[in-house]
Image (cartoon, rainbow, N blue to C red; front, side, top):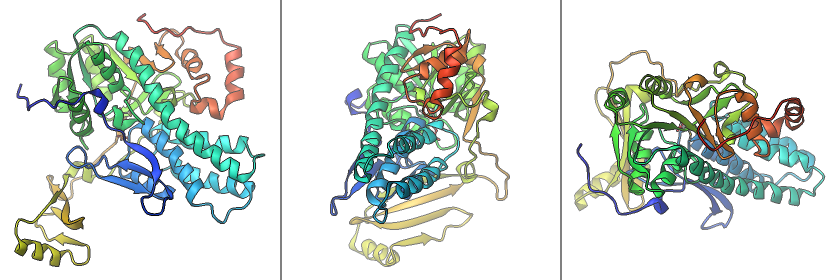
Length: 446
Ligand code: MRU
């Protein structure tokens, strides 16, 4: 296996994806995030001053990953509350407008339940405290959003511990897409398990699925593992079967975008295939996710809305970068071309490239076509893995097994965790659970 030189950094250097801060000039609050569409070669920081900016970042995948989307939704509402409520004088008006913004934020993407969870938690908190003066209500909203950010990190660290204990010594693990620090407020879910196991000295090797079409495995997971100095190798998605057959995988660990009442789980496209392969090779298949990814309102995975994305993710590939001209003549030429701010390079055969001025230099965004013109495309971003292929769910509330009564076990796990089901249907859930025999959660194997 060919390997490039290993970076010196460790787990403490894994990246943070989203944070709350003040605008440098105005001092107004803003949400900052790393543009994940350009990582790892470019680490642009995006600043959102209004909730709509966060929605755009969500839609374009600048911020992505189910738990991170939950936090992004909460911060978007807090941002609206702080920066966009100037003409609102009464609590009633505030709550009405909050409902509208919450609806917009929740519909920025359809599959990860955490997005709706994040918005819903803020919205319901505000409604539950409608008796407060407006200024106090706003402060409460802001504090809740910030708490949700730190809570997410805590959850990941806790589930990371539970998951690490499930792995054997010298574990060889395969993971799909990016369920790392970048997909969460910090630390990651599937990668949180791997980071914790690595700190225990248990990880021998991690196989990183490239994860077409937007290569979040090859770009983001590969980067996080390199930063954490964990031995890993990149494979194309269609290599997983062969790697498993060779006996090089002890466990598959993936994240989740939505887990239904029967345990069916939506995750990045390709996860279902991996689960079947793992079953065929007798390899345990773990889903690591916080309880905010659980949606007990859906009884089976058939009900999960699956996002379909732009065909261009499949018909070409996107590259971007920066450059500095190497002579005064070249600088003059690029200055002239980008006089209006940007320049569309007239490439032949459907390729596209735009050059922008950036700081003292230039940046480019390019899309190179690789398929025949007019090809029809089907590009679902997620698939659903049936519960029977999942060995266990690793949550911050413990390890939950699909058998014998998954729905009750998972309902119990969500109690007190502020899952979407709980915050939306507190009374109903209490009634259902009151009539059920409690099922014990375990942090050990069956
Ligand atoms: O499209 P994305 O990047 O938002 O999808 C989310 C994912 O990266 C994966 O499905 C992941 O495993 C679940 S989020 C930890």
